[in-house]
Image 1 (tube, one colour):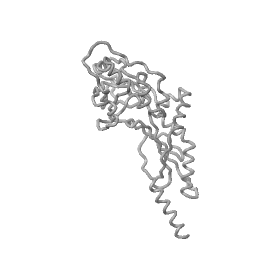
Image 2: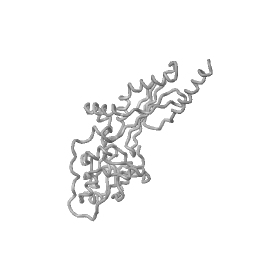
Image 3: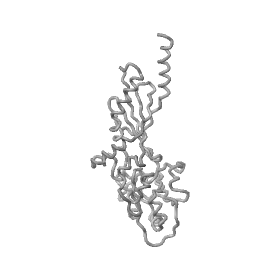
Amino acid sequence: MTSAKRVLPVLWLFAAASLFAQAPAGRLVTDEPGYTVRCRVDWAAGSLDVEISHQLDPSAPTLPHAKSDAESDIQSRLGAFLISSISTVLVDSSHSYGSLLQNDPSLFSRVSAVTASVPGGSMSLSEDFSRLIARYEIPLFGTQGIASPLFPSRSVPVPRMLGWVPTRPFSGLLIYARGRLPTAGSANMASARPALFPRIFDEDMTLVMDKSMVSPEALARWGMVGYAAGLEDEAPLVRAGALPLRVVARGVFGDNNTDIVIPSDGARRLLTLPENRALLRDGRIVIVLDSLE
């Protein structure tokens, strides 16, 4: 073998090593011979991150050949893997995306259209060059977000509360829902969980806000609410503005513990002024949780 031929495999190994990246933690979606699929919802950033790990064919004549074959294999099954990952996302207090897909066959075609528009993923090799790892980032919101097939066709007004309370216009609503909270209607305690469309109630369990009250433009822009793990998460908090109404959650509600109960006086301060009803309609709501998992 000439010196040039000996150098080529070495150069390839260095190039392949530069592609390697450690696999992030996430929820296991698929574990079958040759494939492992994990996903993680980044609620603060508003994305679903999917990782597909595929075993390389050890009988392939070269590493580049094996990598190319693995890329083709992943592409052939990409739609199914992405839909399986989307199925794990909590939609509201009663449903995961998977349960909605099971009960609404027409939804499957709409979600398939969303997955078909997902940009090409990043490809890297495992440290031992035995697997190809493909990563995809799917937006939760936007015109091509996974929530878009679930947007209501029209919005309804935010309910107006009659009477007078001492209040003023706010820039947004900031809800602290950290720690274990009472679950409405039971003696249990639970931690609030993030979802695409949580509902907000007052302490009398009067509905303050749900997705039907958010404008279509706000839903497409950034969804019904934003989530943060703490006040150090600056980006989601920009959503609530400089002078938000700050309230501490009084409890959680729903099978999935995604609905939030806020103080009744806080609800009144929001619903008596048209400016504050407008901020709810614009989705200027941030919920601070212990965990965004």
